[in-house]
Image (cartoon, rainbow, N blue to C red; front, side, top):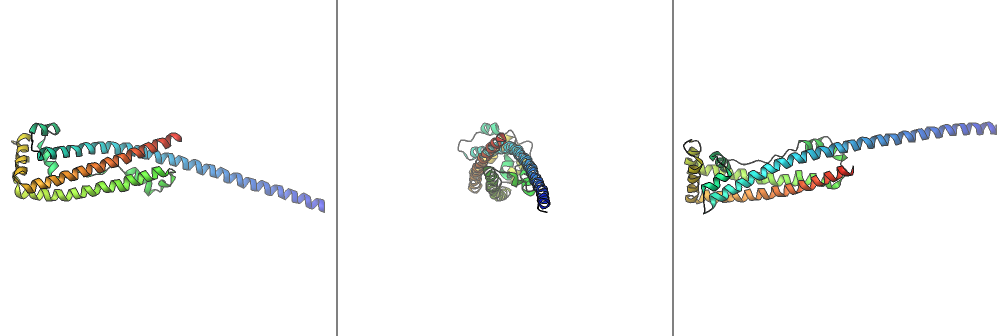
Length: 238
């Protein structure tokens, strides 16, 4: 009986060991599969971020140029040394000058991929804390600061439109008159600025907001470059 019992014990112990080993191997293979899928998703997320960074860099490059042109135009019209030739180096269109006066430039960089990453929960696949911190700083803090400045500028534009409409309607008429070229329009605007301290002071404040907005955009671009470097390094390591 002892020999028979030992035989059964050995048999069932062996079978139990095989089952345990089978389960362990199954879990191990499953963990490898899960890890492989997570790495695949992580690379997908990082590549999507890289593509969007390139899109944002092109967008911010254009915005930086337009915002600098806005600053330059205001500087010329507010300067005591006014030359229409200097204006024409920036633009050959009087509508561009009018746009600068009465419209504000929004800031809407391409963020669809980032929003998708957040909404689908794919953000969890990013292991690098530096990348996570960079994304949060770029799309939350830096982005919010620029848009706050844009909203203040929008309010200033509304006030400026009221001043031009009430006190300088000739500027609006001249912008729609084909007989007025850019030189005549520029001189008309410069004359209005010099004779109206309210208009001039409002333009000075506008210029300050332009410069603040550009500074905030510079900080945004700096964060973007840091993020791009971190993403590229992480992809190379993988």
